[in-house]
Amino acid sequence: MRVVVTGGAGFIGSHVVDALVARGDEVAVVDSLATGKRENVSDQAMLHVQDIREPLDELFEEVRPEVVFHLAAQADVRVSVDHPVEDAEVNVLGTIRVLGAARPHAGQVVFSSTGGAIYGECTEPVREDAPLTPLSPYGASKLAGEEYLRMYNRLHGTIHVCLRYGNVYGPRQDPHGEAGVVAIFLGALADRKQARIFGEGTQTRDYVYVGDVARATVSSLGQEGGVFNIGTGREVSVVELYELCRQVAGSDVEAAHAPARLGELQRSVLDPGRAATELGFMAMVGLEDGLQATWEWVQAEREE
Image (cartoon, rainbow, N blue to C red; front, side, top):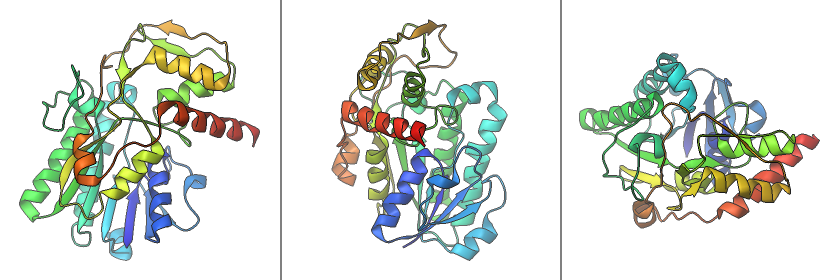
């Protein structure tokens, strides 16, 4: 298939590109390289350096994609709180650009949304039909993107899929760029620096390995629309996560505690049951194994 992946030079997007290339698909990557990296992009994919906030019609007319995976985003909750206009420009206006350019060509758009930030506080593993009460501009902008997908479906008869990712971690996540506590912790441990835990560290998240996320994303090809949680159903506290990171790193460096951050959730865990039933997806990589693979990648990066 002819496929476009926006954000395909980024952390998650590049893994999705790898999975599509492995299938034999013809992949075009659209990425501004604001946080993505050229070296992340497979040699078998074509990179187009462009910001999704700019008109995309000419590029899509050239590529004529059958499917678009829209993963380009401003993905840092902290940045969204400090710069909500920039967050909305990328995540809302950029999504509108993608939908408009895709409509004459692509039969399907797969949109990467967020699980934790869009649901708000959870009292149990949350299902897709739960109330949506985001506590940050990032969560609100992703919800707006979802609503634009649904509106396009009603207005134009399109069929789009929305994937609400848990807290994704794994190789290629930059501790100095895209958000991700695992990358930050392992980066600090590799440099023998003291990591910071904001608040008491009792806040929990559903950590899902990037290889599993890429597999889930590709499995949505041909799906007749719908919204799906992509997670593990297992919640882990930040304190527990840091201890696991210390174990794989073989480190005795203690973390420092800092004041809690505005807009940060205390509990977030997804119910992945619908994805298992309809997409045939279940997370296969356990947290301990995923952290080990990520730590090995971090070490290899330091040696280059």
